[in-house]
Length: 255
Ligand code: ADP
Ligand code: MG
Image 1 (cartoon, rainbow, N blue to C red):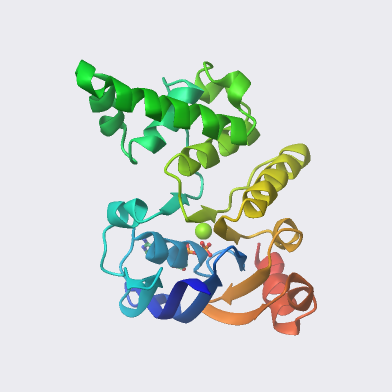
Image 2: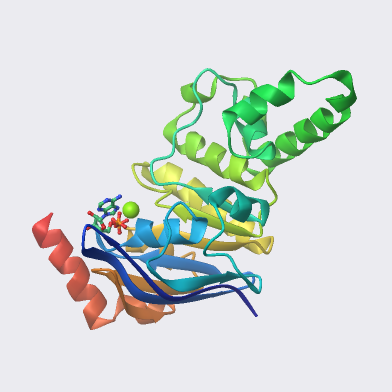
């Protein structure tokens, strides 16, 4: 059964089409990768689903509802969590506090308002704390709970982004290039974390520039180039697709 359906999605910037007539169907429990060279339109598509951008044409259906006119926070309340490309942790906050922000919604002011609440809200606060600790356990970060978040190595900071996203108990997790800039060991740790979330039944959309990172993880792969879907299939089918190889070779030559 389909959880997410993008149909005929199109978005341009200053007359340049970043995403052109993209169809995307993601099943419940699926880990879908979206790959493509730099500038292919991956983040634009990601933001059309998360709600940070509006489509010029096309629709987004999630869990049977049209959501393409919903603002991001409404999509988040509906169970769509996002980890943006190059997302940073909140400085001046501990690892635990960073995750609690996720349980309170997506803004820091929500968190600050919450910690200054009256006693009658303390029970709710305790529940949020329990959820936050559980998310740290799931991501292997529990022992660092009280450390300032920005002192963690980059790999663990990415884990923390995931923990924060999980704290809202999402049904669809969107990840934009979570492995970029990580060292081999950190990438392997992130891959196992993503694998464990998938084993738990979470539906994910994993945007990546790096084909190698997704081939072990994804059920299916959608390949974007110049804003269009040029291939879709299993990782094995994609690896040998001539158009895909050509798109990536072109990228390397121009890089
Ligand atoms: P990717 O994530 O695959 O690298 P993007 O979706 O970021 O690709 O970008 C696709 C195209 O749209 C690029 O040509 C980029 O320059 C352009 N683009 C993306 N976002 C904006 C924006 N906010 N304003 C203008 N152009 C943009
Ligand atoms: Mg991008």
